Image (cartoon, one colour):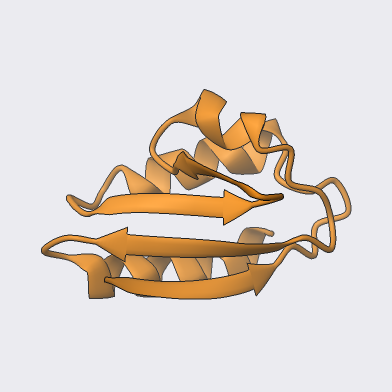
Length: 85
């Protein structure tokens, strides 16, 4: 299992537009990917689950991937978070 932490810099947090893009980016991978923050966790491939976390600006989240392409998934999602959130 691979994981990384990221502090959200977007002033609106994880809102609808970046959440939709995040789900699309994660759907490309076979690994089970989980987003954790605010004391909750959710399957990153499910939009409503990601939105229900209520992640705001300044919150540190942890993204963990487990599966056959976990290294590629973590690398791609780390780049996504840097570019979009």
